[in-house]
Amino acid sequence: MMKRTLAALAVAGLASGMAAAQSKSTTESIEEYRAMLADGNPAELFEAKGEALWKQKRGPKNASLEQCDLGKGPGVVKGAFVELPRYFADVNKVQDLESRLVTCMEKLQGFDGAEIAKTPFGRGEQANVTALATWIAAESKGMAFNLPQSHPQEKVAYEVGKRMFFMRGGTHDFACASCHGEDGKRIRLQDLPNLTRNPGDGVGFAAWPAYRVSNGQMWSMQLRLNDCYRQQRFPYPHFGSDALTALSTYLGVNAKGAKSAAPAIKR
Image 1 (cartoon, rainbow, N blue to C red):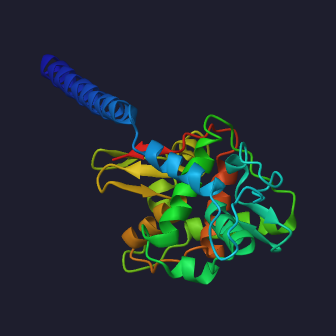
Image 2: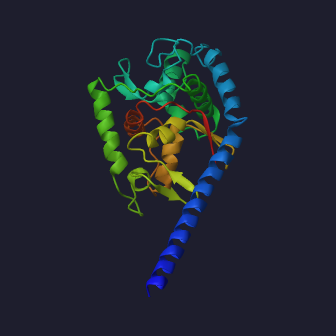
Image 3: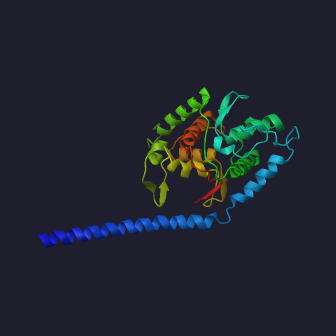
């Protein structure tokens, strides 16, 4: 009887070890695949377009965006991405990168911000906002996230974003936290980072904008969040909405100290 027990335990241990090895091998294979994709990331094309758009005189006012204040002073791009969303006194609200760019396009170039917000993703000025965001993110690649939380509205945005992250609803009774609220979760072969802290939030939030290989598109952070809401069977938040800014604030503050990997490449 003792021999049979020991044999059963040995078989169970061997099976467990094989399963762990197989899981590790799968994860490592996925990482190798991502590393190969990163060599020659198509996001570089969007970076080049974004830099050109920043310097190009456009719009009804025939002006460039070179005096746009992203939080570090007019025209300063490097380091701005890792401190957004943040409070801007000129609009008296917290803005993320995309909504701030639209504000600059309105004020400096004379574009209609409401029209940009209504434009379908990937078209017209929406596509230009994505390209601009990609270049601006690239200028801070490798820098640590350090979102400010000194202004009362920044603190409110964080708390609102936190409530949104854990709010359950929709036909599936899902929340952001259902997939991204704890360690060790995955869907199919995809690891799901824990976005409530580092290093998980550094892996998730810090990688967008990113190029999506599966559909050949460049996705901004706003679109990434909207797609999560789609999968939760929630209605899309409006482009540039305070809701998306608040959720990005929560994720960005949680990513404090993580180095930006954007623009990354995703499956």
